[in-house]
Image (tube, rainbow, N blue to C red; front, side):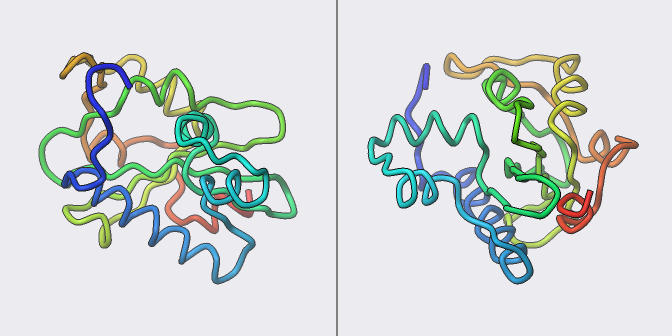
Length: 166
């Protein structure tokens, strides 16, 4: 990543990983769901960390094998108050492709464990977010958004089940 290395101990990463873990556990209770990194490492035999990062950028955090289509979820934690900063690289790398129905799974939360869930299709969010104000921090570009923006998206869904069954 340009400008800085991923720090799994940062508060932002801890919140994101907590949300990803919770979502995977919730979905796994009724569907075949896997962590994308584990899938590519354990099933596809990809062991290089850089390759796994690139695959996660492309396929999201959680993959669900449903009857209708393979669903992908990119987990994002949004603060309940103030601004959130959405990485530009997600808009550039997480987009629709054949065989993948991609969604952003937002959690409006302070801790990444509890809060309001909002699911927005990647085509909808990528189009909307590309028009949001841009900011740069340590060489990385971000789009500035808020919980109120997420709540106003008409095409949102409120549960992972709504997405999986769509």
